[in-house]
Every structure is written in structure tokens, then in C-alpha cells.
Length: 463
Image 1 (cartoon, rainbow, N blue to C red):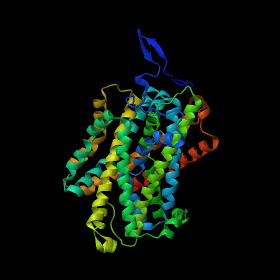
Image 2: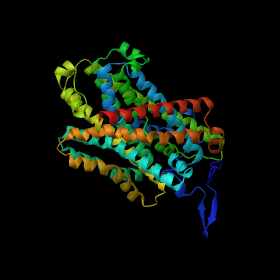
Image 3: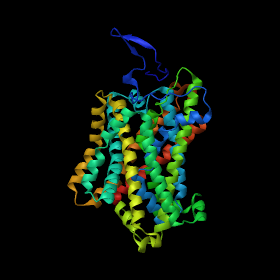
Image 4: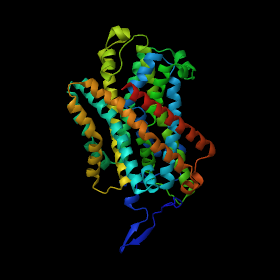
């Protein structure tokens, strides 16, 4: 499939005296779950949608991971509801890119990492793999630190111990994979439901201005003219689209069985995968909106320092900050939601690490060893930093800021190939991007790259 024009089939061919599948295990993305879920034939719309529902929720957790929390809440605390329009625009861009990633996997039977490797030289492939691995490390930093802090807040366990506990969750993933991919989807969906319910409850208690919320979703010129507001807006947009989610989306969209010789079956898979993705990303949009609304309703005008998770935890139980609704229960619920966010994100991060390693360097080893290796690559920098600064939690949380720089650097190397591949008729055939989709995708890509370059420069200047 060097020219990308042929779609692999399940026909067998002779090789070294044995029969192997043309779409052999070594070419399948996440082989142990690829095509593992049967889609009922002739079923109605809702039953079919239920079958396809699941991968979208694993994608959505990347858009509501702990790395986004501080930025969203700070946005509300500083500028009230004004930046809700930025959350909305970011979510629309995410929906566009993730639908393209799902379509790429369904049509080609390959994930973004595999196709990127095929279209580059060996040296280029190694460079792109390193960049992608840095993105996974950056993502894991936010997730592991967020979970570790949540464990400390809930159980008064030392942060370093909490980080070690979180790092070990790869063993849980190995067990879950044995039970089936639907179990993973169900567990992640449960964790996301906890996050959603916690913030719905806390926002309900905060009694925000409904009129202010509605008005906030309409873009304001002040977002561009106010430097502080612009910088925070760029932080929200730049941290929303995660590179690893594009690799993940192109892979787990293949967990449903698709007959790639039947154009109608491919079209159906694209349709329902896109619906699933958009529904779940809409939930992520709701969560991110709730975070910003919570920041606006509770902390706007209080001059509270909200730069760390611990600050937020303490503020929710401080009557001098949030008034009469302050309660230790609110703080504990916040910590529960943080733990749920971190744990759900680490599951998807580990899967993404496997996809990237298999796709770029075609590493062949037992699955348990492969997952352990990908997790060690991601976790080691965090553990080293945490051991070194075990008595300075503020410095450990500062890693979250630097993690966004790595994500910013890696983003173009994931988005540009995605747009190129899905717009290429040789690769996608009749399912290539329509002109309006292609132009919107390129516009969003250019904007994201510009914003991320700006964020990198600003972070270096302020460091």
C-alpha cells in the first residue's frame, strides 16, 4: 500500500509456505481489538448507533483532562463568561479533526501513525516517532500529576506515592483488555459521567447568570484587543486539540467490523463513528464550559490565587472566597472529579502510546511488555522530577505548563499529515474530504499552529 490507493482485504496469500492474511496482524492497529465488535446487519438507527457508541468517549477524555482545568477555571475567574466563545470554537475544531481521524482509520484500515510512517523515510519516521512520544509524555504529565494530587487530597497520601499508584494503572489496562474493549469504553464512560455530574452539581450551587452564559458564547472583540484575555484564550485553544487523540481516533474507529469491499458499509461506519465522536465531544464541551462557568460564578472578583489544583481544592471550602456554599464536600467532589479525569485520561494515553510505537517503529513484542515499555517511557520523566522535588509540590505542578509546550510543538506533526491524507483521493477514494471540509481543516490547522507558536514564544519569554 505504498501509493495508498489500494485498500487491504482479508484474502490470504502464500508466504514462506504458510498462508497469512493480506491484512495481517502486523499491519493492524491495536490488533487485539481491531474489528472485534460485530455490527448488526439491517438494524435500525438507534441500535446501530449504540453499537458504534464508545470510541468517542475515549477521545473526549483527552479534551477534558487535568491539563485543561486550571486554564478554563482561571479564564472564568479573570474574565467571567467572555471566554465561553473560545471554548465553543475550540470544540468545533476538535469535532472536525476527530471526524477526519476516524474516517482515515475506517477507510484505509490503518491509523495515522502507520500512514505517516509509510509516507516518510526511515530517518523521518524516527524523528516523527520521537516527537509523538514527547507528546505522549507531555500528556501523561498532566494526567499523572492530576491523579497523584487527587489521591493526596482525598486520602492524605504523599504526592510521590500517589504518582506511583497512578503510574501502575497500566496493569489495570492489561486486565481490562482481556475482558474486552467494550468494558474499557464502559469504565471510561462511567468516569466521565462522574466528572460531568460533579461539575453540574457545583455549578448549580454557584447559581451562575444564565443570561451571562448565553452572551458569553458570542465572540467579543475584546478577546483580541485585551492582551491578557488573548493569551488565556490562546491557552484554551492551544491546549484543547491533543496530538495523541488524533492517533487514537484513527485507530479505535477500527474496533467495529467493517467490510472494506462494500462502499455502503464504509459509509455507514463513517456516519455512525462521526455521530458518536460529535456527541461525546459535545459532552467534553459541556464539561469545559462548566469549568469556566464555575470559575466565573465562584471566583470572579475575589482576587483568589488559583494557579494550582490545591488552591482550587482549598478555595471551594473557604467561605471568604466562595461564600455560603463553601463546604468540604465541594472540595472532596472536586478531588473525585480530578481523580476520575486523570484515570480515564491515563487509560487512553497508554493506548495512544501503543499505537504510536507500533505505527512508527513497528515494534514487535508481547503486549504486556509493550504497554509496560510505553508507560515507562512516558512516566519516567515525571517520576524523576517528582523524586527530585518531592518536598516542593508547586514545582511539580509547574510541569503542567511545560507539558503544554511539548504538545504545542507536536501538534503540527499530527494535524498536517491528517489533513493531507484525508484530502488525498489516492488514499481515501470517494471518501476524501469535501472542499469545504478541506478548507476549514486547513484554516483551523494554520490558526492552531500560529497560536501554538505564539504560546511557545510567550512561555520562553516568561520563563
